[in-house]
Image (cartoon, each protein chain N blue to C red):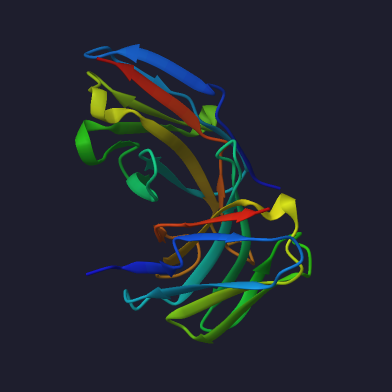
Length: 115
Length: 112
């Protein structure tokens, strides 16, 4: 069965620091990969996605993620964070071709930015 | 224009009551979902419908019953509410299974 691991539960950074949030998945086949963001009190919004092609994916608000197939990873990065990036970040995976296609979400990483 | 809408936004009720949450999407998507997000922000899928047909039914108590009158609507009815049902419930939709999902604003259910 597919699963998603986000090892960082809570990350605290100062403004302008660089960010990398880890995401690993377990599934041997082809996958679709996603990062979602949930700002305080709001619903989940898509940050970026990877289906195929260039493994370095650029999303909204300066975020990017790199798919490394050999490591089963899809880490999220941002070179310089802002206070407004304070939110919960969810990595998600879909196993392509599965009979009941669903997206599995990681447990989330809370990002707190000190102004 | 609201893409995925849910009503109500807040729901406070007593144990043992029956309640419903409604969800509507105007994106023309074929697939809709219900998720439960607990106090630790863990997001767990409950149900998924594709063109009014149930395709995913996770391990959810049968007190929870989804209903999809048409592909733009997916409602969630909960019988005999329990304290442990307190959570935020999110509806979502996607073009088809496995594609990016668009989430509603959530319904915060509090059972007292």
